[in-house]
Structure formats: structure tokens, C-alpha cells
Amino acid sequence: MQIVLIVLVAIIVFGLVRFLRQRKVLKTLTEEEFRAGYRKAQLIDVREPNEFEAGHILGARNIPLTQLKHRLVEVRADKPVYLYCQSGSRSARAALVLNKHGRKDLYQLKGGFKKWTGKIKKKEKRY
Image 1 (cartoon, rainbow, N blue to C red):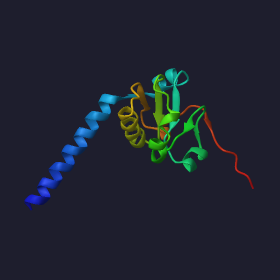
Image 2 (image 1 turned 90 degrees about the horizontal axis):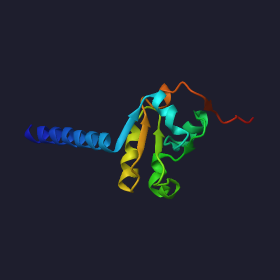
Image 3 (image 1 turned 135 degrees about the vertical axis):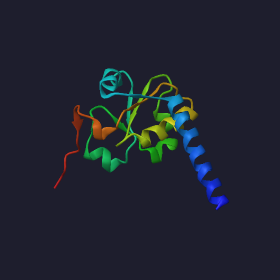
Image 4 (image 1 turned 120 degrees about the vertical axis):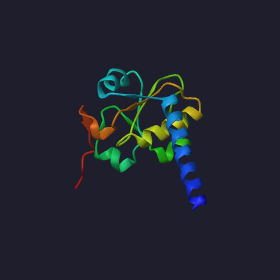
């Protein structure tokens, strides 16, 4: 019983530390704030390619979280980075990776793509 309690406390502490670290390196923006700045920044969709093709914010590049460490050279360190995923959890993890590799000006869309009401682009289906 004591071991289970220790593991549970360790998981809670780890989660809290991660949450506080994310808040320190990443600013979450409302859709209005996000719209105001993303055109002057690097707009990156960290969802998987099939999600991206089903619909994404106009002007976004797709660099999936699963490929981010291998594609860091595609993300400039001298420009702000606006991130989004479906709901916000993957973009927060992406921000930690980017921050660890020298990217400092990091923002994410509150609520992710599922809350986006602006223009989107979808890949045309071919038959």
C-alpha cells in the first residue's frame, strides 16, 4: 500500500513540475490574440499529417510532434513560434522540446484547432 502511495505522489509531483515548466516557457493565447500575431511568426501544426490534411489553419506548416526533434532545423530561433494541435496537449509538449533547443518566443492556441473558428484549408480528395 505504501509503494502505491509513493508512486501516486511521484506521478502527481512529476505532472505538477511539467505543468509549471510549460507555463514558464509557453504562453497560451486566445483565438483573437493568436490571430493578431501568427502571420508575423512561424505557424506550426504539430498534429500528424492525416489530421493536418483533414483541415488546418491557413498558412500553417505541418511538423508533427513525433518528428519535431529530427526537424528542429526547420524552426528558426529568431522568430516567434505559434503552435497548435487538436486540443493543446501536444503543442505544450512541442514547446518544451523547442525551448530545450533554444527557441524562446513560444505561443499556443488556447483549446487547439478544435476551437479555431477562422479560415482553414483542407487537402482536396482525389478519386
